[in-house]
Length: 539
Image (tube, rainbow, N blue to C red):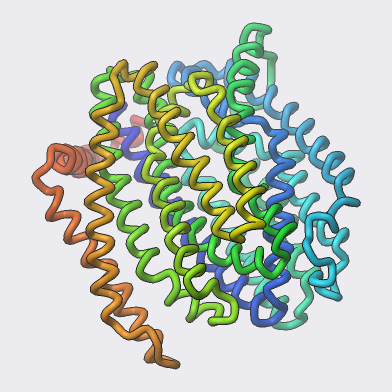
């Protein structure tokens, strides 16, 4: 019964995640567009800069949430409520300390803000840099100071769908209010104040829902000294991973702002917004299956988990490869329709920027099933020094290349850290410690997948490139829609033709068929015995 239940929760989490992601991508896209045309791209540059600084401050979380969720898997499977309550109590106290540290450290670095901006004259005249920064700072801190820890109960119980629906509802209202403010007042302060307000509402609603769903799981008790040591050991192993991610994604934005200015970082932020949107969509799939993988690693055999790993890798590369092809073919036409030629990276340098953005997305996400399994297995110590190597390489390359070749230098630095260093290290750790196999067959498999994606990508780019890109008004949108349709059909048909006879595809179809037969059987059983569901609840 455990296998269908894991699959059911994964599907629920994926569906709710897609709904949440649709709102969290479409609405901010509308908001960004309004800001560009009503206020100016410099405001987006400030948003990107402040977000990057506060992500660095959030390093004080140090991986406590991941360590606690991992520690909850076993007591949840065993029904050990006392241990879960003690873990919650521990995390509640930790989060309060983190929130206070963020407030204190964030306030201390406020005087240095002008040094993070290449040209102080590019700061909008109607903006008080410090007041705006403190609104962002308060928003980051309050999420830890309230009831954020309760969300981990939903994650550990594989019920991320509940949290997704809360975020969807509250954020949708926030975006509608922000759009109204931008049109009515054109006031960035009123616009941004809705950010901490929505964070507070989300925390309150989440707390109410969790208290009703898990009334017996309150903060109570204390962890033993040995249990705390075990968590601290995992956190110590996680510190580097958290820092590495922030260096690659956030400090690059700060360096771009310092060397190239708010306007450039604003334009870069628009391009990266598209990449991060796709990363977020793929991340829904990864997040939805992480808890199920963690449960399977505890209850199923290594060989069974390896077979699942291969099937999930195949599906992941299909999804990521198709998205990368779409990005390659539609990036510049979309940016031209969205922000206009004057707010784009153009020319030869702009072409290579697009190629590098596509590579960053593909290389980042096509290998992400490995860290998903590694995190679910709690193998954070296995590649302890990897993140520090990523930090050194990415930071040095970014500092050296960004002044020389601009945005492309920062992108090359990120790609180097993500792919050249991170991927082989993570893969070796997972295969050696958990699967007990060498990783060379896996690399060969990925190489074949990537070659197929590359060939299909070139063919699709050539076919789509035959269509005119210009035009004005509805003609431009019509040609873009036709390009998008070709990108939907051509890559997926070709990938299917290349893979439908492979063991991975057949195994994946067998798993999907098994899930649907289970669901159909469950529905039929409920029809025949309508009291069965009530009996399950009573039990």
